[in-house]
Length: 332
Image (cartoon, rainbow, N blue to C red; front, side, top):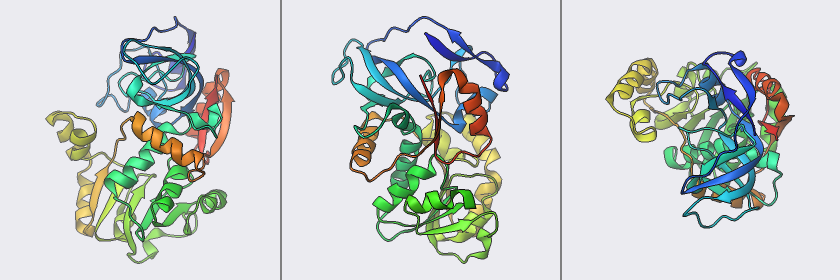
């Protein structure tokens, strides 16, 4: 089978398409014939070695975090999936493997694809969709009437976070460029702040909480949230609770995260808000919830561009350019 391998940490030149043996599922796993796979910023961060403190992969490793395809062979002890089922998944973080013609995935991480989606659309859902769902429900506790700020709403996670927040009853304000403004309004945003010409810091405190999808200096985000409010980020600096709650790691990683997030946590405390960095976790049951929302028409799936698998290098170059509005996927 063809697979996209990371040989050594570094730039795009460290990856290559290679021919490997088709894998065999272990008990509890499902062998999936991959039809499409989604690209995410975490993929090139792994390639660059920026996440080695969290997961150290034995190189070479097949990259890729999310996929859609057909069940080829359920492993021993697997029930609920049969050959030919159209499924999708966010694969296990310590295994990866979505960028290949076949992948073995733990059964509890898999869900049936939405009937209304193509393989390419479905492949763009798992990582970003689960991230948005877990941030909004588990961390921010979004409820009807809540005034919510989402930064970078036109990106992959934002395209799920905006309609999910609206479904939960929130009043949503998002930041976007003029190029992304129509998209975020189409997704349901009540107000759009043009970050190319407007300053978030010019707005008085009015948000009950914020979901940061951009990262960097969050001082203006902190200042825009009411005292006692929550700011959740997937793009800034991890803080100590991230190591314990999301990664199940020990004191070494907690200490590292304490040091690198000190400035952000101090800014948050001075602004009177709570700061939390979120690493999502794969979940087949939560993915099944997203399937229902997608098929009901509540949650649209926005794909920016689809590339042939042979052009995955070009797909990554496009993703890393920052121009994508919605998800970038490769079709196998």
